[in-house]
Length: 297
Image 1: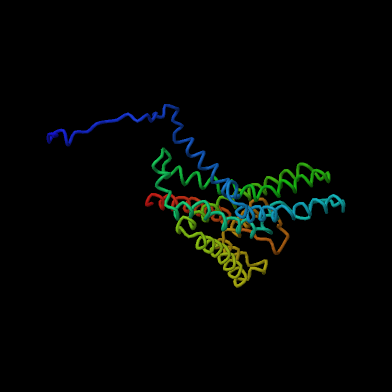
Image 2: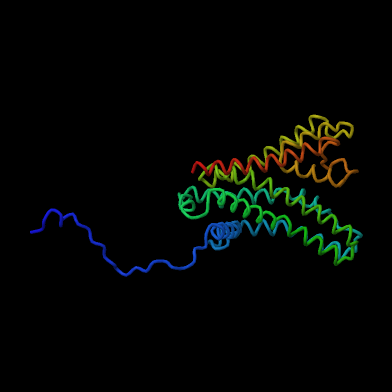
């Protein structure tokens, strides 16, 4: 017979599990790993074959026209590239927008749908680290899509023996435009994707915001006499859309296509400062709201 004290007594058994005695890699390593995995996921790497089709198809769609222009410049012996570097990004702006809409929910919505976000926060990485890693991954993926065709155009210019200094300067203009596009797109796209665990809703919402704002900006511009060179005030309509905002700001900053009536430009004077402030506010505001969203997860 056991006594009452024996019945409630506990015994610790050593069943042979070895404790982890290796190095603790910590918060920085966890954040870097999350960034690398998110960047790979943006291009479908490490996932099924069908997950790679759309991102690489869009990347090919951005680079194919640059390769065509490179061939034309070489065989037709042109004096300059058929299209300027910032203008190339503006002409094919819809492709990085589709890339953003398709891949931003991959980075954000899947974790929410499968309820794994609390697992990330149980590790050394904080909520701020999580958002920073996702933002950096989306920004890097967009920079690859935006910058690769510009580098191909520059390569073609060098092979065709165009002036190095002028092309290098305009390449820098194009890369700055790519940075601005990637910043504002990443901030807005991740914010919208973080609002819903359903990927389809995220894709539709991102494309809806970008396409509708673009249409509204152009309609407002036209209704305010934008095609009349004397109606400079109509250019304020470009603040409505992120894509027209960046295009108009870059053209105005560097004096690009000043003689073209169809080119977008920010208003003179205070317009450049206002456009810059709005772009920074969109980027910082989108990032801050995404961070706030994950404080409540």
